[in-house]
Image (cartoon, rainbow, N blue to C red; front, side, top):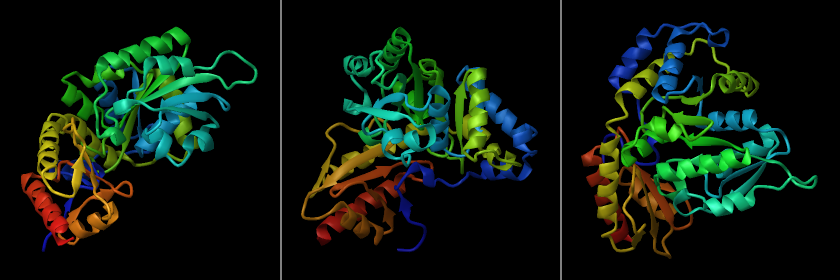
Length: 346
């Protein structure tokens, strides 16, 4: 088959839109470490305004944004409560320990939503033998729970718990706008329940690179220092901030299309023999399934790749597909056909 493959590995694979490329070409730039890049300043002001917060910081990646937040909110030796399959716990290269010297207290939460009573029970008592519990990290949408949306009411309950026990809350909102669109609530209301929020420009919003860290002015002042410490200070970075402005102003409302296509994938795949799809349809743009043994997910991914469809094996039997701006209805049909042929060939 000729042409570019239909790429469902992640929404990070999106290519910049023509409008983004034009914005890159005409971006005003300056040295951002000196605070001289006007395009970065516009993006940071836009992000803060969108979430109705005091300030924002442009960072190279969502991982850096999350790790900066942990660094600012904690001290070495503290303990952080987070969900056991969260990105910050599983997929950030041990940054909690390596960069901030903190200990993780993972709790299992169905759909990514930790139980409030279990969270409260996990908070350490004042005891010289214990680490101090200082931070709760939450993730919305929750990637490895299948792109699930954590309800606003749950976030507000976490906020109330944190206030009652003197803790801070960080929201890993890598796909925050997917959550907001699916839940029918403004993203700012979700962000209002946290002391800091990170969201990615380079996932569903389609920008080529970058994430935003949002919070109080005092928090962002400290976050800027931590970004420099972590090697994230950048120079004439307006050329990558410019497409972020386009992403934030043009790409949020269209996320419903990605959600619709993810549901079409789920409906089509669940009818194929040899696959088991999650029982509930996807809430956003992520579809998980399992291939029945003895076939492995890696072997199935290789088979569909030969048919010019790219997916990710996330476990021995488990695989994932993610819809995004560069996936249209024809790509969904192509994927369903490739899966059907690959399963029949086995």
